[in-house]
Length: 191
Image (tube, rainbow, N blue to C red; front, top):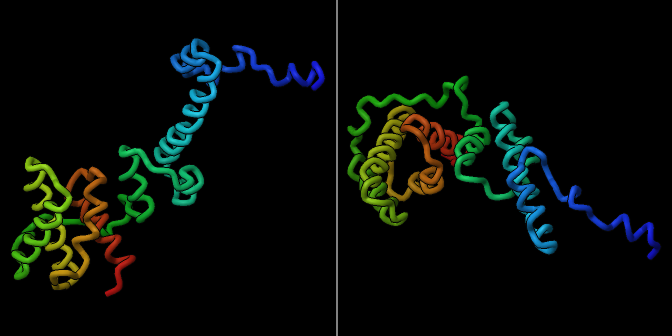
């Protein structure tokens, strides 16, 4: 290998500073032993997509942008709900999934719904302090959906299973949970 080629592969300390706005990271890189620099650089680059996705979500990106940025990588918890809502086309302009909280526990199938919801939450090992809230939320959403679409809830119809991933999304209220459930139910579950 010629001396000139050899020099082109030598990194100077200045070359290791990845991003001048991340001074804490730069100090760590400069102070790290030479073998650790590759690990730190890789970690920084691995997490850049999260910042890029966060900015895209704030600007109102579409599903294609999410796919291009995310590339099937696991989402951080704080972005998961926002991404789901975009993927399911749930937004404030779309009133298809509006929810009203009136008379949500007067269905003839109420006991069956409550039993199925309780069974789901026990299987997911939901903490006792959240248990009652989650039971009430899911029960209200199912009951409202049945009334709105003139459906009859039946044990084993698969609706309860839709809530398994939705419970991890940290929804803010029943209307948000309803929009997620109704969108999935109406788009992907045949009647």
